[in-house]
Image (cartoon, rainbow, N blue to C red; front, side, top):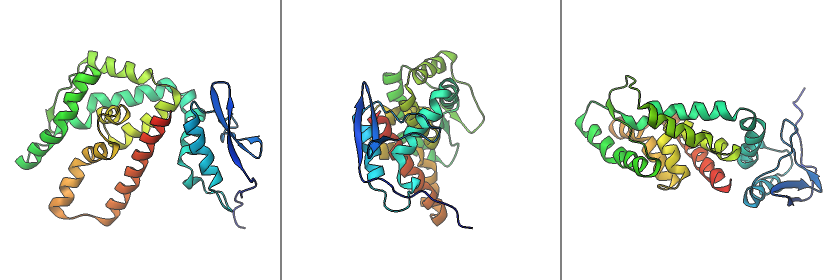
Length: 234
């Protein structure tokens, strides 16, 4: 027996304002999240992006073509109920940040990491007030408790929608600092993504690119760029 799939049943998707929140209606019926909560968003821009995704559906509904809807659902159904746990998990990246663990060899890679990653740590000192230490190798070295406390407080202050986007910015890049850099506009999201992939790009240049690895990396890059767009719309 073939699996049943939902099909488009509406003619028009439109944004409606409800107090300080914005919702999407399909022929006058409010869209809900998978958990049956009201899909209410903090900005008109986000609601317009969600409405456009619903309006673009033809025939069978394809959730894969609705990234803004998925992210809004996650903010409401997941992050809103686990805000503290999500914030703590993301803040934990700061104590083992990608930017702080450097290669011991070859000298060319060592110099390349310093050239590309040191400016990000310099930005973090100025913008975030933290001075993270850099180490050689992969053995964990804890950062100062005051720096981690400051970063943790910043993450906890984010609202549910910002935090949903920030989750992907940090987890996809492997760096709390690059996540903040993308969120706060230190550099363009694509440039920051390349910084997070510095080691992988280096290896590909030395030994050749793997086609499957490239496909996975591109999918992650697109998800990272979407997370930045969702953060900005929040």
